[in-house]
Length: 288
Image (cartoon, rainbow, N blue to C red):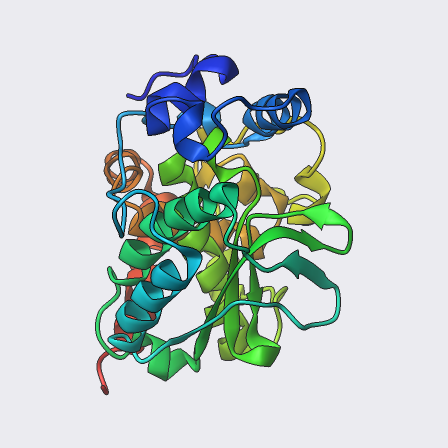
């Protein structure tokens, strides 16, 4: 099991060999405060395997233009295209500049997002109508800072650097898959919040959902795994839409999948949910 106690002040050194690697030789007091705040607020830190590393996509110091070119080529191989700005109602974000900080931030973001997307079988993105991956920084949705969001109305998923270097790397990959499942769900039912009767029937009788994922933000929430039968995580309890996306995210992320598989051996409801989502994924590749 992963270590559950990691001091925020050590996170930068553990992940990237020291804060200088993320682009600030002598971090300002404001940056240090923001970094520590992001580390404390990372909902995945308690379930993180801090030994999991993601390889850089380019040599250290690569320019933003060079990193964008690499992303364009790798996404094109999946029949996807990048977007470097966000234009949609409710969401705000900034584009990466060629500052030292932004070069490091984009490098880290791409090192997680690109291999995560490359885990999918051929044809999934075409079958679900995903066309663009938006890669930005400082993302907020209706005023809440986010690391990722689905955007099916513009055929996109959005992934962001919001002090990502302070956070669990594999936790960010889980978010990549989680938000893509929200995209899939919207394309299946034209509704982010569809109460799927097939899914609900898999729950143990005493399962009760909360008032939606947005209500977890800003409370020091920790997304602990398998809090009760049928639920892969605490965040899954916030709504059936989050339950689905959480099972999918844990299923698709190598650092988390073994725990889901282990819990499924003795949790029939969780096992059935995992199998249902495997069928959904398979249905989007069978005809390709």
